Length: 474
Image (cartoon, rainbow, N blue to C red; front, top):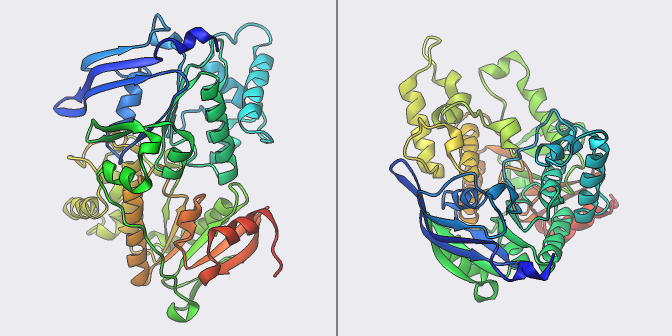
């Protein structure tokens, strides 16, 4: 990037507010972002972060105030890129063809070859050693690979240099090694004069990669300070929810009930046990969970008495019904149980949804709104409510905390432990070691098989990482 790019801000917001009808999503925001800055944007789900970035990237227009991007005639050629938490790739197109959608310069004879070269180079620059084929259809990729492609498209040249890249929960589907590659690239990008807005509920990443942090609460900026001016405790306090760290009290086999399941891979679980599945992303954990869930729910009897409930991490693909209301998304798993003479009891349905809205803290003033009106974290809460409201004795969770803020995570950990104490069993796959360490027992996967079974004091980050990278002796 040229030295001229360092002379003025990338974007400036002055007195910006945004309202949706009577609801004020943002209130009087003043913000300036300069070249070379990595700005951490934090706040609980519904604090206004997504609305703010959609104003900056031009998706929304402010109700009041001004947004100035000095390098562009319009927002399309401003060099502002967005990588969203909810993946936006077209699943029926190849990786290279998805680049073409946002790259008008790829046209004419041979554009596919140029697209393959550009996206391949961007992937290799950010994620050295990746195994993503630019010709592969997106629908064949894992959620981690799709996240990598989305990020690579965000940083790709696309006919003009990227000046500001907005990353919304970019590591939520990535394991620690791949996430580390991304954080290193962000630092290089900012050192070269680029700017990044980094949104994450993983506060360790915020402290690692940013040089400035803005805290949002209820649509307002409540803090704007250099990263070194915060510590973990002060940052969480500024967000408005002093989250108590959950310390897992692991239970031994003698403290649990009888064995309730076994799998061909060697996974087993007892009544009331929280069983974790860990290891590097893409090593067979999600596939093992899917086989267990489908085998237990495909029979006729499962339609009346569900053997398992499911909490999806990939919301758009496996969880959310986007055309339905929050109420219907939360209650669909319990409609059978609430039916009377074959008819849905709407009063019971509404009462169940309202109960779980309060218990799990879904932020909405109307359960009749479409689920897409919620933030990503609140959509995830609806999926938890859908599963926990059932009578299923086993709950399968496929990396369920994607995009959930730190305070809500602690609340969910406590809820899972309370449900387990009542005899419900949990199978929990997570890419976050912190979450896996909440479990009573952990199976670590490598290359599609179990490389280690850990319990008690063995369940710690060091042992999990060792088993992820090297097969352990029996």
